[in-house]
Length: 115
Length: 114
Image (cartoon, rainbow over all chains, first blue to last red; front, side, top):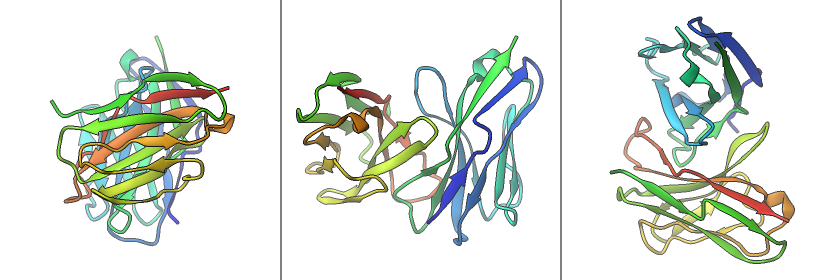
């Protein structure tokens, strides 16, 4: 079974600085997507960024970028120029072709932004 | 506007009293799922449906039932709720065409069983 692990329950960063959230996953499949979701205090699930396993180029969305290391099964999220609105729970998630009906989530990392 | 709507958003109930959490989507999606979120465990899939009348168990189905009689609706039924079902529940929907297709989540339903 596929598993996703986020080993950092909590992280904090100074406003305007850069922070990296870690995620590792385990799978024997080759066709899959990886995602980062943001969950602010409202508990809404917001898609931040997605990465296709077949693409070597790391995905970027404005201040958010990923470091995708397929061989190491690592998928970290880098947030540059951190803003107070970035404070949230962040979840790493996996979706495969064979198991397309579901997302497999990590445990989550709570990110605090210090002003 | 693309929406997944869950009701109720907040509920406190007593052990053993049957309850239903409704979920409705307006995007004509084939896939619908229920997840529960618990501290330190992330979100885990309870049940899913790939189309009308097609449902299957997810990773944590015990104590739950679902039905998919219409494409837009996917209610979650707790026949005899217990305190260990106290959780935050999310309904989600998506198409089945591409893995990259956005999965839409409802706003969540907080359920407390006392």
